[in-house]
Amino acid sequence: QSALTQPRSVSGSPGQSVTISCTGTSSDVGRNDFVSWYQQHPGKAPKLMIYDVSKRPSGVPGRFSGSKSGNTASLTISGLQAEDEADYYCCSYAASVVFGGGTKLTVL
Amino acid sequence: QITLKESGPTLVKPTQTLTLTCTFSGFSLTTRGVAVAWIRQPPGKALEWLALIYWDDDKRYSPSLESRLTLTKDTSKNQVVLTLANMDPMDTATYYCVHRGDELCFEYWGQGALVTVSS
Image (tube, rainbow over all chains, first blue to last red; front, side, top):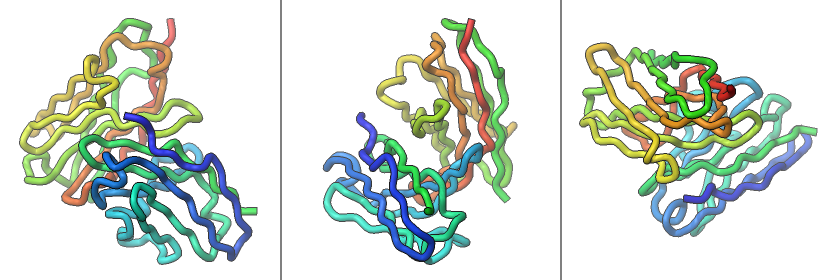
């Protein structure tokens, strides 16, 4: 099963909003609403930021939001802060589990 | 509080079999809906899902690695053991043990264990 497609990098200035896309197929992203997003800082384990397309675990700031349309899911971070600079991965839990290739977010 | 920790060798030779143990606390792998996953990450690369073992001992493996992977659990010790046969330098990665609860996502991660494959 191929990895989900994410842009390799995105960037934004503090206070701005950025959106990271995650494109799959009707067999994964488009199959159900079990899409999740993970933030990973260098040398650290990933952290769950969004699950079930748009739900936030306790403790995750409201600046992080998720959505999905067809075979593409998106993570939007509004009011960018310096600490948001990290790698972000999407994940689809369908017949199998597949991750995206990762997106490096740079806060300018 | 849910915690997981991976343990095992840091260096293995090509063709050897890797055995990693995940020791966890704060949940039981006999509770309906609970699963433990293994996810790896080669240096500088993306996350890759390897396998899942469920509370009822059902197992799922990555199609690309299924022939080389085996998962077992010991509920009395709160441990899950991953074996990966015929190791190759391409298998060099940080291996994570991860809790999956009722929600189909991975909320609790171990610290990761870096395994290097080299002769």
